[in-house]
Amino acid sequence: MIDVADGLTHVLIAYALATLLSVRYPWITARLATVAMVGGMLPDLNRLKWVVPPETVEAAIGASFSWRPMHSVGGVAVVICIASLTVRAEYRRAVALLLALGALSHLVLDLLLVPPAGTYQYLWPLTSAEVVFPGFYSSRDRWVAPVAILLALAARSVVRRHSRSRSLERESRESPMPADG
Image (cartoon, rainbow, N blue to C red; front, side, top):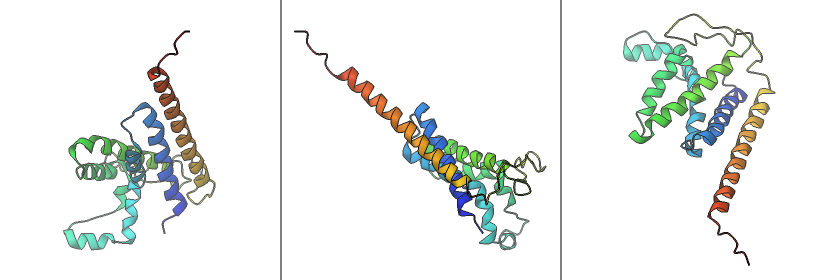
């Protein structure tokens, strides 16, 4: 079954990254930060195998099929290309970049999982070798989600402080100077 804490962690880390990047790149709005959050869940589309078994898809398309490549750079790239074509032309680049940000943050976090959970063919179609890193945590560890929550709150706080200081700066430049008397 889907581990809610694992999914929440991926979404919150993508949010934190997009939110922090919005300081440097003002085109990343709060609305577009949610696109990164969706991207944070893209690699887990491989879990559709529980809803639509590969055999069902194989029967429908008449060819061999697997959901496993969804949890790889190649599978995510295909989904990002398709998803970015579903939005208006002026948003395509931003949507593609933020979906990629979220998806890549997901894949990087999963690389840090304790093997065998952290073993996937992440670099498919470049290589079918399974990439294994020494694991730092399990997807069932409960401390990971609170850390992600704290990081998301900290990112939001940093951006709010930055926005306030920018608006105070603007106000000070626009306010008339007091007359010397």
